[in-house]
Image (tube, rainbow, N blue to C red; front, top):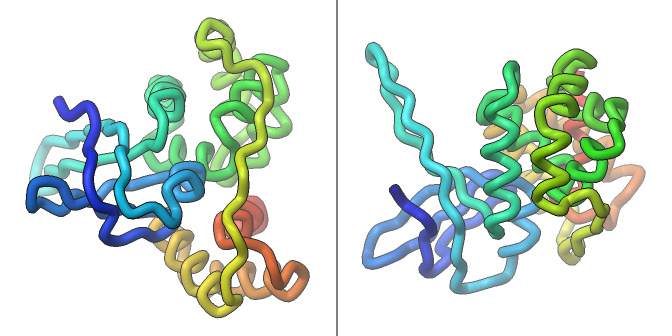
Length: 203
């Protein structure tokens, strides 16, 4: 089992990081929280969750990378909940930080959790019921806001945001429409915040 990968960050998008270690480039799926944490860094350490899907012709081996052990732990808790798969868990952690999610779960804020794209009321309630005690045991009931990255040129923000949303499973055309609308209202908004807003608005 891979615990973490430490090396040079050779490529980075809001949804994917490529880390070169010992001559091998590892592609790791990441959340927006991890993107924010490692953006601008040359060397990084990402804690790894390995996902192996076997059966038939669609065998796959996917690596997920996290800037902190805490985020990886929350991700692993989320995917134990019925109805929450790998991409849904990553989307939750792209919409909220681990601390914000911990606060929402511990206070029973189902409305906030339900605001994540793809999460219905029943799933939000199930997340709260299944994870409340575990979240409290991790000491994550206090909300902490993570720093946002500096704003970049709007065209770059648009392209990166649409790319991230496409990698998360949304169609490029409606994603681009929502992203452009957000940037018209908030021209200096950084890419991870644009994606977070878009996740709540895409139909």
